[in-house]
Image (cartoon, rainbow, N blue to C red; front, side):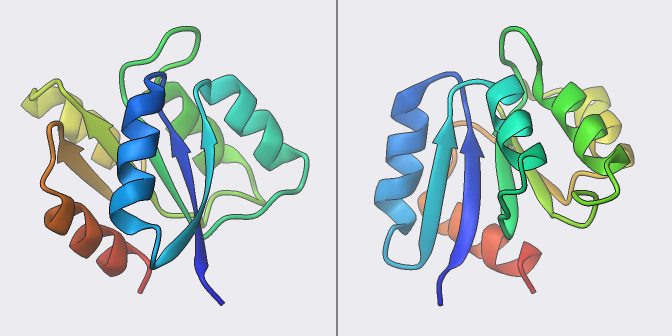
Length: 121
């Protein structure tokens, strides 16, 4: 059975690109809104990994990460953050909040695949 990855990015093209790169290895659920994704998770849906953009309207990736890690039923799901913002302070803040990894956009598909594989072990 394939592992399930939740992709959250306000740009649908990023979700399509990730799915295209990794569709042979994983099943995907995509949301353009962190709020919608979090509500979907709270409704009892399960995933093996969350891959989320950092910069999004309404609720950013950091806020989502904090809510996931504070939720008793969701806190053990590994979260990998994606961002076009290459700031050391942002990376540190996300890692301290419980992110498994941080990947800078634009990303190399092979690197993304390897980091996901590592996070799912």
